[in-house]
Length: 82
Image (cartoon, rainbow, N blue to C red; front, side, top):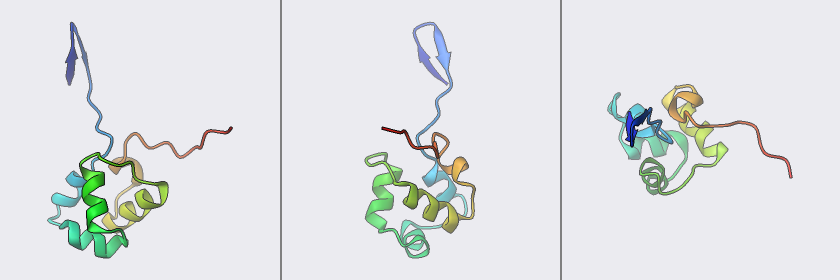
């Protein structure tokens, strides 16, 4: 929970990639090999320095054998129309 003044709100991280990678003892290097995404890019995604593309999210979820929405809870599959 995050506290703002007198209000507590639940904190939902942008992604839980590190959590899903570390629990089964998968290194960034191994995830990079399994997903086809560079290890440096995985590090940037885990540290919330870049937003992963939908294709990267799908590759990472497939490599970790986890539902995409569990790893990326704020993921919205719909695209905004312009």
